[in-house]
Length: 141
Image (cartoon, rainbow, N blue to C red):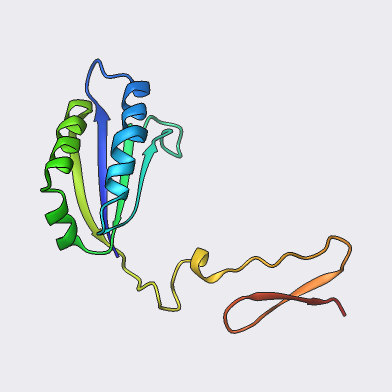
């Protein structure tokens, strides 16, 4: 799957509250409505793991079903308006086109796609066994 990673800081004088309100009201619904978009998230950075400040205040992740479809859809009048408004908030954003290095159907697919949660009554002693596709509870010996 193709994912566009957008890294940016806010322009001087733009408040985080104003940008985030615009993103919730305009950016997220419009981008998520595009047929080529599988999912779109806007993330506020909290700093580096080391505790140092992050080089970017915001990260956008746009997961695409079709990069070519997306390129066509963002040329629409509505999306050009969204992009124009975005540029009023974002200072020199970097748009990075990425590809997953593992196919979603391979055995190395993300654990989120492979794991299933099975409710187990709290009083029942259980152990887990691995089936071909998921962990399943079984009665403890």
